Amino acid sequence: MTLPLRSNTLDAMPAEVAGCLLVANVSGGKDSTALMLALREADLPFRAVFADTGWEAPETYRYLDTLRSKIGPIDVVGVEGGMVARAVNRARGRAQASHVRACRRANQARAAACARARS
Image (cartoon, rainbow, N blue to C red):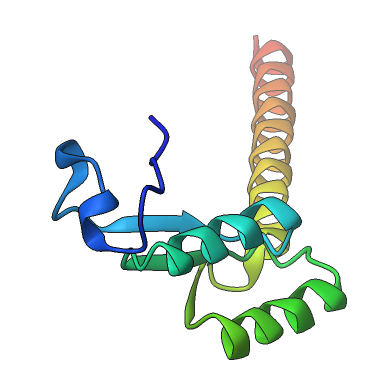
């Protein structure tokens, strides 16, 4: 559904979403900047949220600071340490699981060899 920007008042909001919190997903790109500007110009209250992956270019963070100073607050959400930390932790978990499986197989092979030697 598109918001018809008939006027710069709250009555421009469709009845279906009146009273709902509008959330603008801010990436630091042209489209999310245009969205924030359109919401502000329409005088529609909204919450701007940036999902920080930890992989953003330094210029993106500087631009977000510019948006904050010109348009308003931007909340930041993400995992502690960013997506990089999450990916590393996941990779470590897979590596540890692989190591455990390899050790288990080796131990099973040793146990089988011992059992054959005893019989």
